[in-house]
Amino acid sequence: MKLRLKTNRIRPNIRRKQKQLDKVASESYEFFKKKTPIRSGNARRKTRLQGQTIKADYPYAQRLDEGYSKQAPQGMVDPTIKFIKRMVADIMG
Image: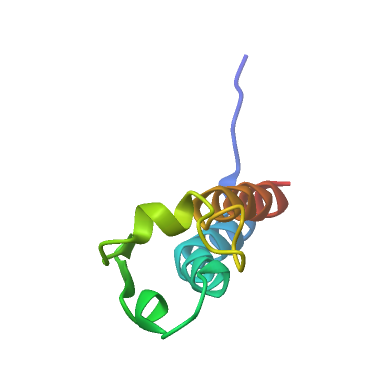
């Protein structure tokens, strides 16, 4: 008995999914920034994407994420994690 897998039919689908997955970090970063409260603009300005990591590089980031601001009572991290999970689920089907 022989079993042969012809990957030429699935490769385009894998490539398409990989391209979509490659966009997850940048789209999540934009989502995170939009969730970040804005008063002076400092928090949004100092939020960076480094590779696959979103860095909120300011002393009061933890405080904002804990719901200190009325603009973001749920913080930024939890909503962003939910956003990422939905994105990946949509991509992977």
